Image 1: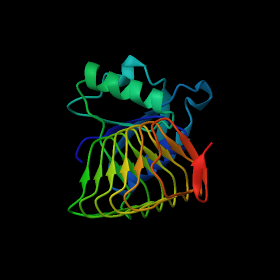
Image 2 (image 1 turned 120 degrees about the vertical axis):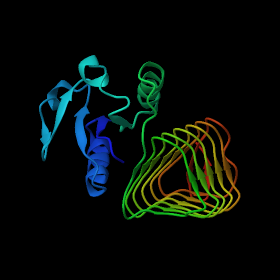
Image 3 (image 1 turned 30 degrees about the horizontal axis):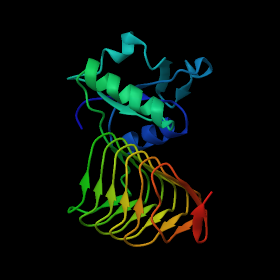
Image 4 (image 1 turned 120 degrees about the horizontal axis):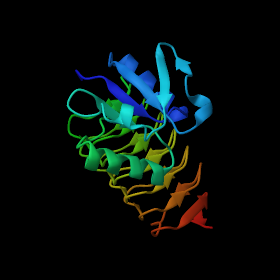
Length: 210
């Protein structure tokens, strides 16, 4: 990546993204966050410059500056992504950790965070604007929609389908061939052996609706 990156979000995910870009030798212009108490804070030589809607900084995104949205709350992430695409004609870039193993036969969309030691297997497909946290495993032929969060250490076995907006907690295991519905939630450490309907929350071993 030749252009510098402006990171939207200076919390845990923002710092994670900053670390990934630095490890990949990508220049980070700065971070933006709506929490006033973070403004002026420095992470090494990179500062929190202002709010996420500060046009003085947002307007630099475009041909010569990339953007990455590092905000955990999905609704906020969606709003900022839509603003960048519509107003700045800029699609957020991926932040992929250098220790992640992504098959050459896998497909990765835009604006995703792929954290340390993540494995994405052959023929798997990850949509856009997803958060895949440290050590998660996506086996073969896994399909992940947009705005999905997969927690640290989760194991997504082969042929699993995860619809848009779903949340998979840390350490969860999704057995082969299961489908997770749109905006569904799977609790941390759960073992999912049956399909999870849209908007449902499942937890436990075996996971049941709660």
